[in-house]
Length: 360
Image (cartoon, rainbow, N blue to C red):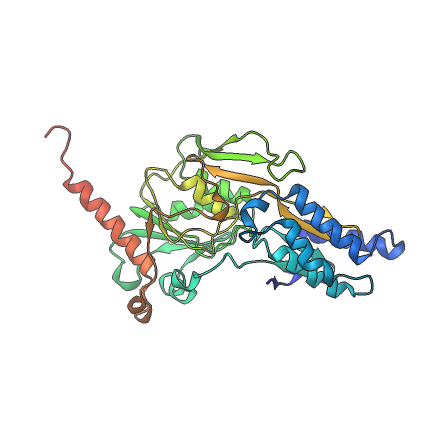
């Protein structure tokens, strides 16, 4: 199965590349439009360059099985639209949000991995906590929480729904400066489908006092499904303009993907950070694109990423504390995850007050 979305969701660079390619096509058709040749090319590109074939395919099946399943649906007389549908179904077997096929007339996107999000996130509840008097800094909406009688708790809330929109270091510093009187911070990235890795890096560095290893990456080096480089250590970089060192709770669900998944990787393990909610959606591979003979593009993951324990994060990152929305809370217009995060922060400070000093 596949979900088709509109072209504005594509990056401007990719759109420019496609439009430029098809503009030249109008002058001289240099593309091979054979449906069979293009189907074969698509299958071969994934076979040789995709990083997760052995992990993503249905049990007891192979990529050759997938070729054989859909090849009878392809013939030289079929329309472009029909070919696009068959190719989308072939790629849909991988269930990977980083695997897309792009034509001038359509764009296929796969999100079966994004399940049960309504059990962990409802936008109407987030709107209650933000109210009408929140501030906006780039892709961040933020305020001190006052909803549900929390005005005295001195806890800040930042809602980051996407890393695909503008987020500068100035945005981050300005928001944290205005929240500096708060004793703790909740960062809500539920249903954040990712975007720019640089935005993830900028935000995570604000909480990182020194460079620290967070995992490993490896990339495809050959056509075989297991031809990879040696693992290369990856780091979360320290902040250049000051670091927030008070408690931070990050809210996650299966809608957290790609660059947002990378943000969780960089934040998990920091002593002041708790990951709360559900396992993230994953998307740990770095995507790249290849052109088909007819000028369409296929995007796919070309690398794998692991945490420090060697766990592949493609399928997601587990939270420190799993919490889902309670039916009674939803009916009362309360977000269970936010309420549990607040309770955790209050208990943290209560425990610190009652903790014996080293002199006792």
